[in-house]
Image (tube, rainbow over all chains, first blue to last red; front, side, top):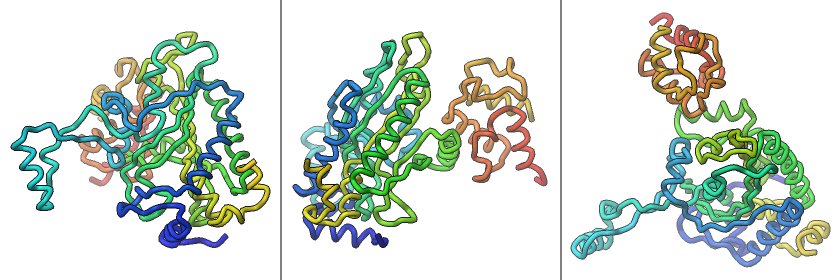
Length: 302
Length: 80
């Protein structure tokens, strides 16, 4: 597979009606064929996770600002966060705001911060639900959600809003590490069955600023984040389609989560970037699903 | 210098133990310093000693203990 530019990949996805541009980078719509593949991949994840007896939860794509503030997200990724502001003024202020809007002048001064922020990851609403003492086997929660990252880019795999299928494991350190290792193998096998040349790598998050470089170096050195990568645009710089984060006792301390024997619980999460997996499939197998290899079609459309 | 480093740790490292009970070689991470806290320690050391840690020094081991920090600060202030 030869490399492709971000623009050419974007244009090919648009030409085949897989994505629908809306004018803002990273906020495109999805066509029905794209959605069909995405849903079917999600079903394969469910199938692989069937025996795990996870608790399923569904949250809206916004979270309580207090949970967000408590989670340290703003400390690590201020540049990615999406805080929701709204209007709460009177008639006169409304008229002033609308004058500004119509005259294309700034109108942010008429907005004030609400109690909610856009969910930056699907797992954040889960941690407050785990507060208290876990059962002996710990807990496992399975969610899917739209998440927001403020990183507008013409590169189709770098979106401002996308879906993550995410699972969170809480328990004793060895329970959590074993679960993560098991899913790393499982995730690789699942993606390879779909004909994707998936490989694991040690990774770090895009922490902000100089302090962020230190956090990223710590994360790499302690091997706290792994990604499964697939070449989408380039073989030299493959794209992460699945990510595993081991938080150690970070959320256990913040949200007072204890193991059955009274220790601070460890947590880990794994997330499949559903749009990215879908894009990787179109990039590797072609833009027309009818022409995909028979063994891949058999897995997705049994 | 040690005194100054210890004061910065007291204020920013969010240690679970009292800094005065730790030796210069005690592991600060073991004593409860989180990664985020170590960033605040790093920034406070820069302000206090008027130095800037280069990228190669922005790593866990450099802030592991009082003596490791002293070594790093001495390296940065040498020749000043």
